[in-house]
Length: 330
Image (cartoon, rainbow, N blue to C red; front, side, top):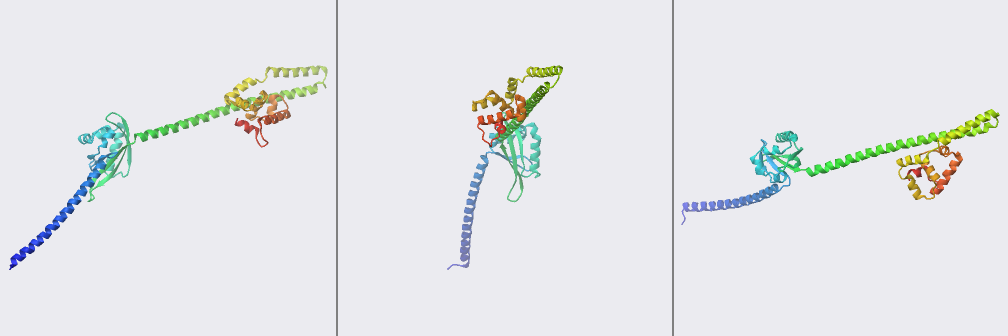
């Protein structure tokens, strides 16, 4: 028969066995949790180690705590190089950009900048220029303690090159547009010169024709001496006309400089056009009126109008088509 002492001892053994079983279960759960944590940490570390961007961790004092191997891809220097020589990072930065990088790091470490990015240039180990973009994010532990900044530096050299190429193209297009505008202005100026000279010639011809016509009408009603004087005036007018004949070939050469290929295109499309037709086309293209055409061709306005009608037929224009507008796009 068991004594009280033996019974108490057996109860304690059962309790201890239960506690031991509970401890074993907790230990198993803890080992499983540690295993999952280790696996997760391994995965996170693997992702960090193989990040495309150059990743690093700066402690609250601004010193490196960890650097990803991607530093070697961007700079040619390994994480060990940077950890051994803390000043190496700033030695890579172009002198023109170093002060702004130091300022940026100081600001993000001290929470004076949040969510900002910075572009700067570095020279790699092989002295190649690289454009970099840097951004950062604050790091805290589970208790909310500030651990520093997780920074990432991305190589944006290709992007900068592409953007510069786009800017160069845009500037080239602006330059070409301005050049075209200047060219159009020059053409318009030369057109105005041609039109001005033609209008003056038309006015001169019209005045000379008017004087000859009226002097001829009044000559027979005058005395013989006066008739001789009038005849002399008419002869002087005719001599002036012969001495100042309009040089069509010279005008055509100047016209072709401004409106290249105008005559060849017209003649190619409409082979039946005569030299006079082409001359009229050029005058109309310059915007001259029927009256001015008559003055240039030394014909009446009625004859000039008939010439326009015949020209329309040769060009095959319908009733609704404007001759001047048609010749503008030839």
